[in-house]
Each structure stands twice: as C-alpha cells, then as structure tokens.
Amino acid sequence: MSEPTGSGVPLKPLVEALLFVSGSPVTVEQLVKTLEGVSGHQVREAVAQLSVEYEASERGIKILEVAQGYQMVTRRELAPWIKRFLQQAPMRLSRQCLETLAIIAYRQPVTRLEIEQVRGVSADGAIQTLLEKGMIRITGRKEALGRPFLYGTTPVFLERFGLVSLQDLPKLEEFVKKEEPVKTDETVSVTQTN
Amino acid sequence: MSAILKINRKPYKVTLPVFEGPLDLLLYLIQKQELDIYDIPIAQITGQYLEYLGMMELLDLEIAGEFLVMTATLMEIKSKMLLPPEETPEGETDPRGELVNRLLEYQKFKEGALKLEQMESYRRDFISRSPTTLASFEGEVAPEEEWWDLSLYELMKGMRNVLDSMSSKTSQAVREVMEELVTVEGRIQWILEMLVHKPAVYLSQILKEARGKMEIVATVLAGLELSKASQVRLKQDELFGEVEIVRTNR
Image 1: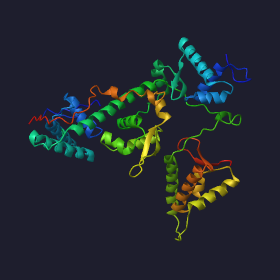
Image 2: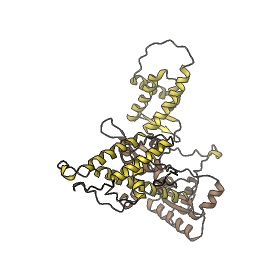
Image 3: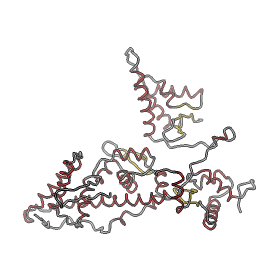
Image 4: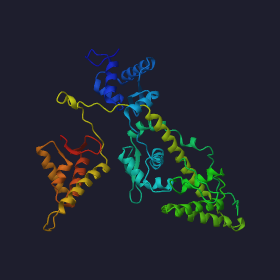
C-alpha cells in the first residue's frame, strides 16, 4: 500500500477522510497536491479500492465519479428516508430554464440570440437565473454585430446533472426518431382541408 | 404538463397548459393529433393555433408578441400554399420547409431538456454533505483559501450594489456641482498607492470612498486593467461574496 512521503499513513484512509470532509467533488489533482509524494495513478487506485469496499459491505455511502473528480454521496435507494429526515424540498429548474440550459449545453458557446432563435421566445430571464445558480457562465464575446456575450456551462452544471464531462451528454440525435432532412426542393403538395 | 387542451368540444371546457412559446404550442397541436410534422396541414393547424390564442384572450391572458409573429408566419405560409403549383415561382421551395426545420430543431432541445430533467432527478438521489470548514476550531489551522474565476458578471453585480448605495447617499445631501476630471490612469495610480501599504483591499471598500458614478466606473475599470496586466489579482471567497483586490508580488 502506497503512502504520502514520510508520513507512515496509508493512502486509502487518507483519501477517504478527504472525500468525507470535502462533501463536494474532489479532483485527482487536488488529492495529489494535498498528499504529496503520491501519483495520480495511486490516488485513483485508492479511490477504486474504497469504492469496491463500500459496494461489498452494504454501506450507506458510496463514491461517485462526477465532474472531473470524486464525491462521497449516499446510496440512491436511501434517498426517500434522507429526504424525509432533512425535510427539504429540492430546488427544481423551470422548463424554461431547462430548455435554455439544454441549448447552451449542446451548442456552447452560444449567444442569447441563438438560444432565442431555437426556442422562439425570449431567454433573458432563464439566462439570468442560470447565471445566478452558477450553472452557466459568460465565456467570451462573439465577433459579430454588437459583440454579444457567449454562454457556456460550468462544472456546477456537470455535477448537478451527474456528468463526468460534456462528452457524457446523451446525443441530441437520439431524441428524435425521424431525422431525415426536410426536402425543400420538391413541388408543393397542396393538402388543404378546407 | 398534466393539463389537457380540449379543442373539439363546445362549449369549451379548458384548462390551459402552459406553453413555452409558439413553437411549443405548434408541436403540441401536431403531436396531439398525431400529424406528420413533415406534411403539416397548415390551414387546420393555423385554425387551431388562432383558436388557442382566442382562448387566451378570453381568459385575459397576456399574449406574448412571439405568438403574434407566429400567427403572421402561419398566415403567410397558408396563403403561399394556396397558389396552384404551376404558378409557384421558379425555384420556390415548400413554404412550410423553414417552419418544419425550426419545429424539428426546437423539438430536439425540448426532448433534451426532458432528458436533462431526468438526469437531474436521478442525480438528486445521491446526496452529499456540504463541505466541512474548520471555523469551529478557529485558530488551529487556516482553512484553505478558495479561489474563484471571477467573471465580468460578478464584478458588475458588485458595482451595482455600490451604485445602489451611492444613490441613496447622494439624495440626502445638498451638494455643490462642479466638474471633476476622473481618469482610469488616475484611479490605477490610486489603487496601486493603496496597495503599497496593504497587501489587499476590498472592492466595496475602495468604491465607498469614490465620489460620483464616474469615479466608481473608472475605479472598476482600473481594477480590471491592473488585473489584465497581472499587477493585481481579483479574489472572491464565495460566490457573489466580496471582491478583494490582491497585490501580486512583482
């Protein structure tokens, strides 16, 4: 078992303790930097071992791989009791926010106008809310008329939706069964009903 | 969306579902009647669309401008469709093409939003703790500083807070009006002088000393300029918290 330089303390309990106090996701880099003298590979190994032990011994907690790191969380099937204990209604995003967020997630970096063109309605309020919740951020300006802001998602977004990276987003094409492009060059077929 | 829109029965017994916009409403009408999105019966759909707007009016709901723009688009397509094929100008495409593409595009992201919602609700069942701090063991070990990449947005928010407090300040006192020349260069110098004595200052603190909006704006710009030139770092301990201007050692 590897250990940080000269500490005499094995790595696994150290990693476990750090994940416990952090609560939020901890990256491999953070662990390596804190522990000194261990490699990223060793850290990952220690996390993997912990994870296996948790799974094998019917524990209430598990280690989740999330936005570029690891997070200690409770097991999913225990959620009803935990929610009852905490007596908290989870904060939900409105449909308006979810749709706006979906467009930003798949199209980033994207301007407000581009979002509005897809949804056909104003996205001002939704963008404001998402900025305040830290799920999107301004990534720059588009070199176009008016130099509008470009928006992209943040690690908070990844964590909230349980994604390790943006590559894990389900493919947009899978959502719509019929994906043939509309034939626009054929003659007009008149299908009037009245 | 649990509510149901009943169109064909009279008198109307309706509960209006909330639509996110005209595209959302059109998609609903198409899916509800299992119409082919690639071959939309425009006249039928336009009629139902207008019927819905009529209901909104009846219920005194405000109809957003976007809905009216779509009405115009539908009318235009409808009139184009009435032209016999041989009178269609050369090279003219299906007048519905653009609308269909927009509907398909919107539909994709609507499904995407639903998928995100499912993912969020799944993820929500893995519950984590909030981070531990050593605040209750004060003095033993300093908690590690947290750094945030500050965006312009947060800086502007900070500025707005100060501007708000400014306006309440100025309204109370009678003042003599005189023109003052404020330059960003001057404010840069001022910030640097301040940082000679202390390693860091709070943005709110230095903005409080500023007189007038011009000076606040110039000071914020000066802070940004210094940060760009790596002479200072902008730091924030928590999201939407106090912005600190920290001297870099060089």
